[in-house]
Amino acid sequence: ALMGAGRPAWTEFRNTLKKILSKDESALQNNAGLRSGALIAAQEVTMHMPATIGDYTDFYSSRNHATNVGTMFRGKDNALQPNWLHLPVGYHGRASSVVLSGTEIRRPAGQILPSPTATTPVFGACRLLDFELEMGFFVGPGNKFGDAIKMEDAADQIFGMVLMNDWSARDIQKWEYVPLGPFNGKNFGTTISPWVVTMDALAPFRLPLEPKTDPEPLPYLVEKDSYQFDIKLFTAIQGENMNKSEIVASSNFKYMYWSPRQQLVHHSVTGCNMRPGDLLGSGTISGTEPHEYGSMLELCWKGTKEVKLGDSGEIRKFLKDGDDVIMTGYAQGMGYRVGFGNCTGKVLPANQL
Image 1 (cartoon, rainbow, N blue to C red):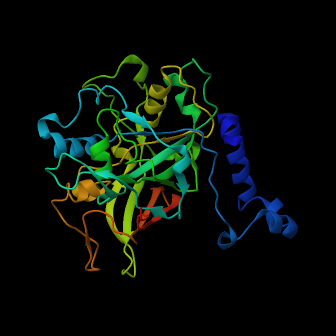
Image 2: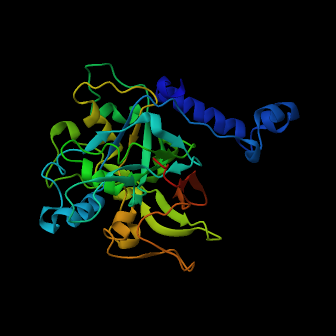
């Protein structure tokens, strides 16, 4: 209901909560009965999904990530497909398998090629299980079927953002994705953090960007005030035999090429109706340096490098059973921090089929 109420209601709701919780407001401070009913200790809280997600779409909007993956599979000269700089590439995912942080993820099984030279698949457990460091945003009021969301209205249609791990079975995906794109390689689990940080709360962390000119987007995708958000992001892994997690990737949302507004506008330009609580994923967020890569595929460079998990003595190329993947993120202000909580998931062994 809140997501569908629109920006004026969101702003009023947030400002009212800030006022009630302010150190200068006595209504709550001086009323023990009100405090006992309104405030709950964090350790006693069970978090739930922040919305009923009707539809889920994932994008592919980090130029660094798209270039890295394209270079691995097609070579440097053909890294980006011809359409990539003209539109936010995306695909429709499964809302039913979007799960809350802390949910265990079963290693998927499916058709895979048993060797790099094989042309006939076998059935088996995924061997190349990966994380993808992403962020997602929730749609607000939405648009009517047949109408499009215009760029000047797009900001008022985005409620807030969460951390996201769009788990990927690279070997299943590699065999299946031609010609229609990801399917079973991506549908077995997408983890999000329960805390939704509103766009009002993120407004101080906007980073102005130069308009895209090479090439310039088509008019419906042009932003008059182009910006991204300065949100620091981290991915850590803790194996079953490790006593603490180790960070393997440190990235930032500012590296995204296509913005949330552009993704939303492009998604609806055909008249596709967006609804309150719909979830849109950013796509893997990778920076320019190797330690900023947002997936194991990039960190191990398609299996050619080993990824050390700190001083634990353990190494990875892709995820092992028992690995706990922990994503965190925050926006840093002057003397304060806006955090997103945790986005975690532990890998369980594949089912025996």
